[in-house]
Length: 330
Image (cartoon, rainbow, N blue to C red; front, side, top):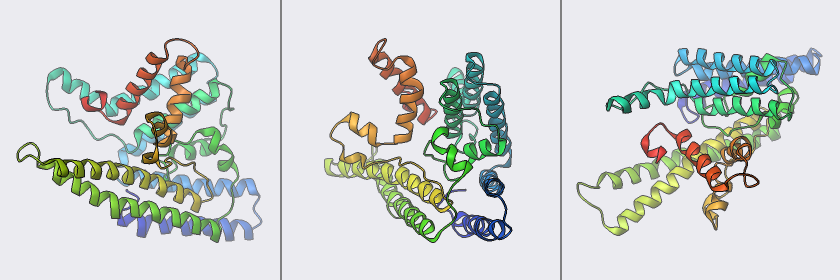
């Protein structure tokens, strides 16, 4: 299910919002239910909605998601500050990612056959990165293991950030999972405005720009294209890539706001950057922060070892993470 699909906009989202609002504003408050119990009920509603969202495409992938979150909950519950548990947990997560996203490519490459593989579960890369960041935070004593399975499951599977991020660190979301503001007209308005902005980026701009770029690139190499047309194609593709991805981030942030969550920004006008370094800090901010905290700094960063080797490994991993293909690797 996609955020801009008819099913999501006119069926799924209204149903979840209505159900969530009823329990948040009327049933729980009117019945005098304790705040902790009220939060549990609301989290359960969001978790069920997230599993339905995930299962809409393929039900079997939902079992993969449940298995991943349950195993990582056990790894965390088993004291992931232990190095052995951390290594086992990360190895498990990476094996799952490799199996569904890269195994078909490797086998096809070895056999020199077709590189098309089975469809990977929705947002698998984002799910795995959330799990690894959680285990790493426990190992580095930044957080304590989450005792509540419901809370942990919602952190991993919350549908607003499930498909295309942003990647939200557990330490930045923990307090909101335990206690957050109730549904309000102000929050709903702010969230709707942000969601509509992202929806417009995706549907009105990104799709049209993508179609334009596709038609221009299709002319090459059979027909050839002149310099001006080539530049138009490049510009259209560049803007389409930004509008599509930042549009999804805007929609995720807006959806989170509707339910009382404050999700961090993922883009900050990257095409206004004056350098490659600045661009990287403004583009897909959550991914850049993830690689910095959980790969670049553990490797040694710029304090120990060869900084250029560290940078190479980080961007090599970034390329592989973005897609299962030789083009991404190169």
